[in-house]
Amino acid sequence: MDIKPIRTGTDYREALVEIDSLMTSGADSSEGERFDVLVTQVEADEAKHFPLYPPDPVESSYFEMESTRV
Image 1 (tube, rainbow, N blue to C red):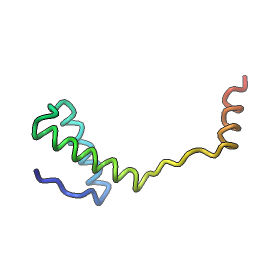
Image 2 (cartoon, one colour; image 1 turned 135 degrees about the horizontal axis):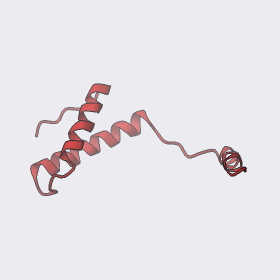
Image 3 (cartoon, rainbow, N blue to C red; image 1 turned 180 degrees about the horizontal axis):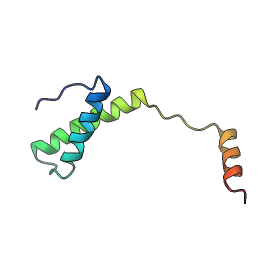
């Protein structure tokens, strides 16, 4: 299995395209193993570059009030 690290945006996009092509692979196949490894890499890259933070409670309340206003 030849898998390289995700270092650039191009690497990231290529990994996503390959993941898409491997979505229907069987879990016990070599393609399924490659799928698992690529997904793990992409998840780690996304956590590093696109972290998700919990919303501020006050801002969340304001958002809810504004979005439910008629």
